[in-house]
Length: 181
Image 1 (cartoon, rainbow, N blue to C red):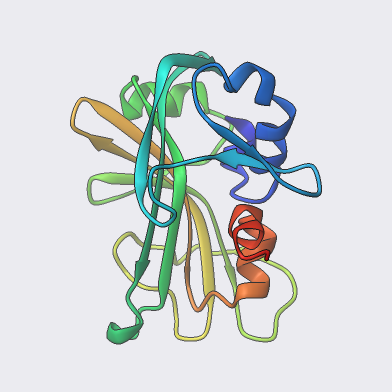
Image 2: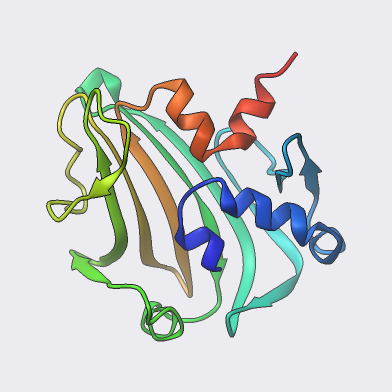
């Protein structure tokens, strides 16, 4: 769970490190450079339900969620989401991940909001992150999101806005590997 909270390639390294534990409940693809990822039904969107729950940080992981949205026609950029579907409520998840600072926007919570402006090399804190509002034109935002989804909770990372491939692939190495010949 900690590696997901970083919203970077350490999540895919953690899957690689735990793939022997994960493979009995979900299909995992091992890639290059010490990364692995879940094989979802569709490359861009889908939910992979585990055959039995996994426990991590005292939270019950029921499945993996993946979604890509292209909102460039609306000048909002691209949105890439990935993360877990959990049994526990958002309030319990926040209690278990209490080292993170959570903010509320509408019916969602977010943490770890970072932004990278055009020409900048490093991510910086984004105190202006607000749910359902696109990042400033030309910038890239990433954050950890928490929301209720039916009887479950989604804990998702998002990278969104102007997301050049070279930046996307550093955060989501699974997408870079899918592009390999």
